[in-house]
Image (cartoon, rainbow, N blue to C red; front, side, top):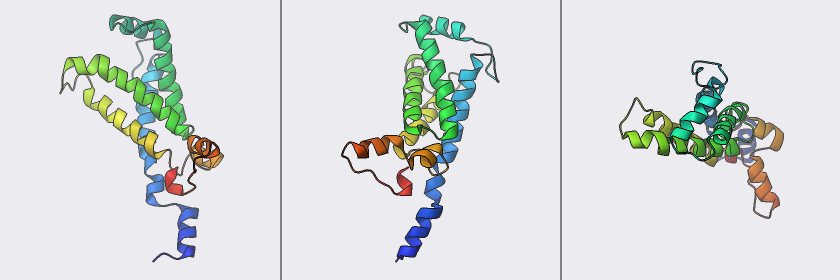
Length: 171
């Protein structure tokens, strides 16, 4: 049975599960950030700029493709940076889930499964990893934890009358 001192020690130093979201955060952040920066001519996916991406979205029938190209690029670059920092992690991950889910629906699923060339497996894995971050949060090594003591969303809900957990594993 754990003593009070053991529990206090675990809260102070964290447990393995407090650090488990870190590889997911870094992996998802890298993939979406590289894709987003590629639209500005930076990185391994440089080539198709935002205007070219808008043309691609128009060919898919996406409404307001010029606006949506900038929205998707902002989600990928901004969301990637936020995930790297562990800042507003749940919000950034939720936006990435929406972004990649639309890509799955409009691009990969029509190509059929399995379609390794279309990237359905990669995008499905990205959605599941980002969805996990929505559920579990940033983990201990994050700005969410340093600045807000955990998830700012969880703290806001606590202020609205719902109990906010303060255990390290609920970050």
